[in-house]
Image (cartoon, rainbow, N blue to C red; front, side, top):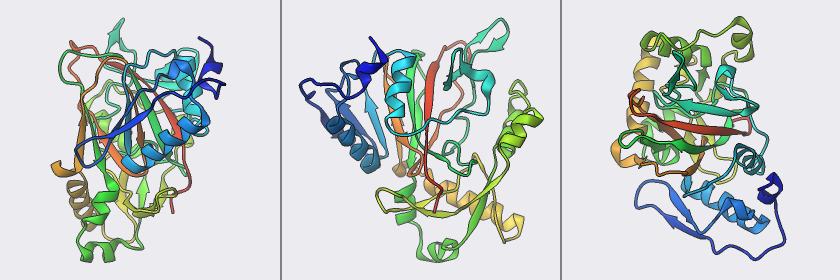
Length: 296
């Protein structure tokens, strides 16, 4: 199957159904086979569901890395992860997320989801979304959790909304990498070249989703080191309160992976978390990341 089959092609429309989950976010897209190509009309429906529900799930997608990349590119330019050691060989756009060890070395980023975060928020133009395709799944564990950061803002007490309205926060990949290395020494230290590629950035604590217009809490346990302009202890306490509010159980969808699932989530209106799966339960997925806008 050629990459071109993922582009708009002259054929009958697939019978696509959007089935929202009974929860705070997420929907399943039924009846779409990426091997048959995706028309512009179908792409528009996917994009609409993605914005409306934050997470969309495509079941049983038996596609190649080339097809994964080609489909992802239809949503925007792709971003290459700074941890280049864990790119799929020959495909720098694909980050391998895996707990598998071969010849004493991890084949992928084991702790990619080890804390709540929004992908690449440490860049001036963070990720719009990410597409994660399952390759090898364990018989148990390995779930991914998603939290609704738009609903988190909506349900925030009025006093906190007022306090946060004009605040900015620092997002840093080095901050996260150093913190995770204390828990997992195997995680590679960044080279100076990698550090130079990801200097800390400031983003508003509250952003407006560029497509839905909803207000969003844009801070995370993973990448947000501190809120600018307030003492560090007050910042730490406030961030802890916000993280707990965002990730409360009634604001979280748990995705239980099935073979060949493709999950596409909105990094602007969600955060995600996946506990490290024990090494004897093999888990490998491939991820592409779509570039977004400057948060405002």
